Image (cartoon, rainbow, N blue to C red; front, side, top):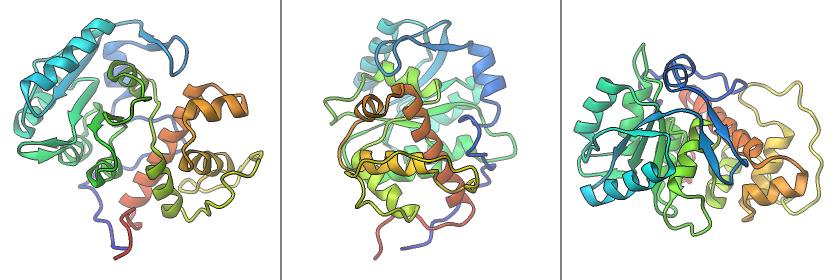
Length: 268
């Protein structure tokens, strides 16, 4: 496996704490108010307006996103950006609660945007939802750099963009089977027990960068094609609790990579 280059000067994140970036709790959360789930990963509503910046490849694309968000209510949609350069200016000018960005822009990638947000001594609290299609390696790059969640346009069963936007701000994250398999490889977890019934035991002594038994089992189940909602029904937990667990796994991966760990890229 090739060595991963750490992302800028991004500050460490304690993977044992609820997902946050910089001043996300005191900044984006306080200035925009709390988010309430109505029925976990089903219909969700927000209790107050949240500010969102849209960065899409073209005006037609961002117009569609804008229409969906406004129809859902509780969103203050900033004027859209159609380039990395413009988005960077607007991010620093408005410090929105959420950035929804295409994976590929005309003059840059979503990973570049994430690095801007997460680097420096005073990183912005904006959370990032990446819009992608299928098994794009650039999506892994964005998640490695610190993106919070993604929306897969090729996944017909995925929640809508507005729903995933709310879930992102509520601390949840989506995951695809191929990403779960790469994470199993990254953390050195065997996947052959994925179909075996298992009751996870507490991992009180697990290190901050190690997966707990529950996290390992969740990745195994997701790696064989089960969805978060499927696993939630199977083990009797709320889907939003498992979505938050996925977010914690991403944080552990990001922390490890920043500490000089190996990347998720396949061996050459």
